[in-house]
Image (tube, rainbow, N blue to C red; front, side, top):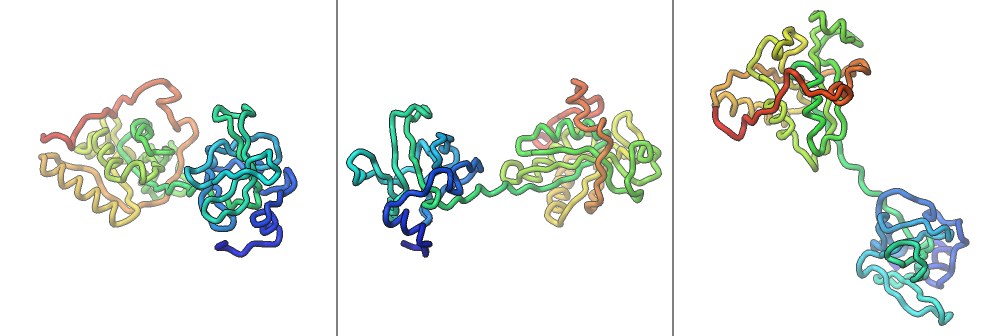
Length: 285
């Protein structure tokens, strides 16, 4: 055995004991993750194969391939399951009960297991301003890997701005969208390309019919790497002959907008009037 065991763990894992039903730590656990052998830490079961059999012990209808060995039980009627790596006692396996389509139930002692929760995907934040935030959000929310979008205001000097004050053009804020995304599914460059490809980044006084300082094209960067990516894309656009009005600014306080602005086009069943997608980076002007 690779890890020190308590007397009770020894009684179950080494001497084939059984914990009382409904007493174990994992009998009702529904979290996503992997169940390991308490003695040697070998991965044994995935949470996706766990089900509630109401028997009082953790139940699985499939083990990780090769992780569990079946041997005849000393009572001559049941099949014992042990950890393939260290031979520690896990419990028993039963078939033909009809609990799941796999028709198998690994009845395992919680004390024989150690649960490892799946890592929470890392989330990052990006902030884009490209005119009316309704249209910006409409396109950003549709990117696979984006988990949340929030419309709001950024870049100004007034604390707790509202729509009316921002529309006055006196607060310094722009209508902005905060984008929460999983960098393992979508990268920052992809978000930036969509930003440029869904608004007129050459317009310096607003966006389409929306004229005013609150509708300017801006990106708020968290770090030097984001600035580098944006600067590279802007340079590519300039080489294509575009005059780029987009400003790159340091990230600032983001103020969520009033509730009725959020997911506006989704709720209205409409599409943006001043934002539309067109390919830019895959062609020359």
